[in-house]
Length: 129
Image (cartoon, rainbow, N blue to C red; front, side, top):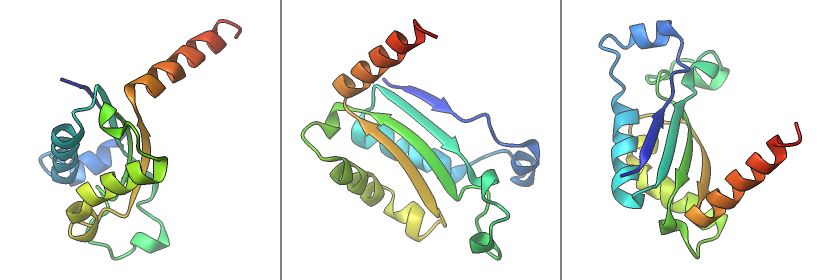
């Protein structure tokens, strides 16, 4: 089972404007990513509040779940180039993009080995701070 980190960065007015505080698009994304990639680490952040007043979203029906940032760590990405990894995620989330109004997805996709190396580099660099 992977570690899922959900964003707590949403301002209260966006949570309140969604009535029940439920985020169906984010929930759908989490379920699909978990099922398809079985990630060992998965972070999802709803960054929609940063873009709610942009001209491109004026009049849009979905402004509370339109922009997501994700970190997906899975060995399902082994042997794939970065663009290929991103294409598989976009294909997986095609309905959310085309039918539910998801406007942007920022991705960090790594294998477990790549993630471990990155974490080691980060820890090593912090020793000198």
